[in-house]
Image (cartoon, rainbow, N blue to C red; front, side, top):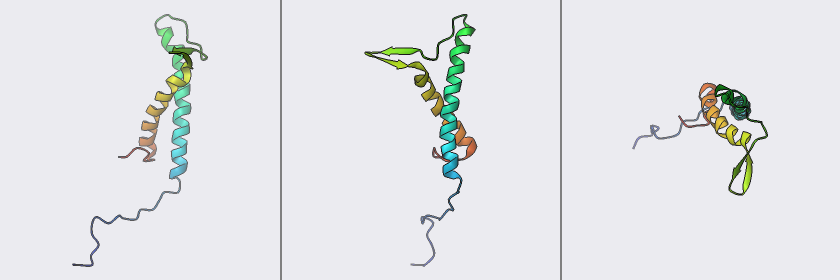
Length: 96
């Protein structure tokens, strides 16, 4: 056996000191922007079809509960924006 390091040994990589701050920024900006985009779409999208705008306090009846529509729309929009902000900011939230 040789004392040469094997290629399977993990290499020590220096941790970026701004990585956690950038990750937090990605989550905050993505979900904040997701809520803003959803709110704007509540006004713009129905107007394209000549319908009245959707109020921001609209509720959606699901079974026996009524769920607010804005968070229900902003949540997937926020996750969609996390994907793209993660890519452009290089935060490696999602594996490459």
